[in-house]
Amino acid sequence: MKSKLYPLRKTVKRLETLVDTSLIFSSILDLEELLNTVLRKAEEVMQAEASSVFLIDEKTNELYFITARGEKGKEAKEIRVPMGKGIVGWVAERGYSLLVPDVKKDKRWFKGVDKKTKFVTRSIMAVPLIAKGRIIGVAEVLNKKGKRKFDKTDLELFEALGNQIAIAIENASLYRQLDELFLSSIRAIVEAVDAKDPYTRGHSGRVEEYSLMIGEALNLERDELKDLSVSAILHDVGKIGVPDKILGKPGRLNEAEFEYMKRHPEFGAAIIEPIARLRDLSPNILHHHEQYDGHGYPEGLSSEKIPLYARIIGIADSFDAITTDRPYRKRSSMGKALTEVERGSGSQFDPKLVRAFVKVFRQQKLTKAKK
Ligand SMILES: [Fe+2]
Image 1 (tube, rainbow, N blue to C red):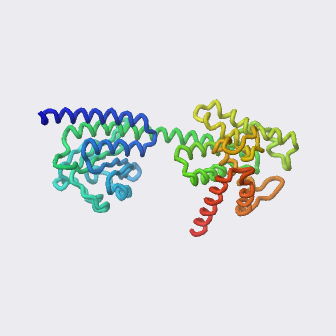
Image 2 (tube, rainbow, N blue to C red):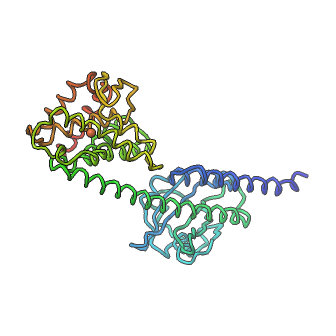
Image 3 (cartoon, rainbow, N blue to C red):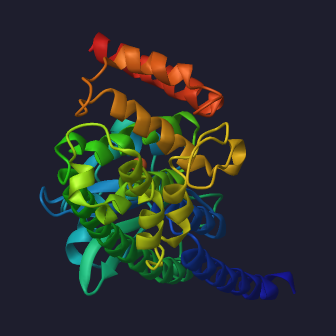
């Protein structure tokens, strides 16, 4: 009875894996995390010791690991396999799956990877990753645990997973291209705004750099750093709405001019609000001139009521203003600017963020000096 039920249970388990992974594919946006999760599932259901995904580097005609799981995964990531070499290279070149129950008996077996990683491969199952009719890489599972061997049903399941993996990689690359295009368009627009005033050329890029230093010191996640980065690049985009004669005035602004200038955060928020991808970031732009003690503008918000990214950008923005020439004063050194930022801790700036910035800035300076 038990033996008759075994294949049925196995099939159910496989179906479950496919359903589970298709949910994973639609819910995880980060490619590395996605591949890791899917391979872990594949290892579990196929009782494999390790697994990896290779991509083809078309420039060098080699395969490189994009994910390598298992006890020697870290070491494996450094290795590149020439196209056509070994089982993986064979699969990548021909586009066929391969089931090798005993690698020692297979002439295509390439010992190079094991030699470098000290992993002992016994059996391999490898499938090509094909996107839009093009072979883009190979997925493999290694060493079936226990006495069983990888079989045809394992291969069928792994081929189905391979199709999903290929689509996920293709989507991630399209998404990345689109995102890069989007970011470079934003940078181009902002550089044009910065260039309206000769004193602010390159300002937004530097504010982005300093903001990211603080964000990294706070251990923000990758997605959060991206939002911070876009908010920082765009923080002064509202200056588009400020007349050139005010922006480029060679001297201090009078009260009316300053009142006008103070509206640039509102203009900036209004510019990005209609853009769906940016809407959530508009409070960071609207509030980048608020002060920790409530004496800033436009709303006089204080402490934690000011969005975190706006507080970060506020420090980065002031630091860059102090360290660059302005029409009415010369720039200060980085050291003096840091002291000035520290002086504003608790009044203009959030003390926690000032501490993080000063610490990370000094550390970076030290590492740069050591190089
Ligand atoms: Fe500003």
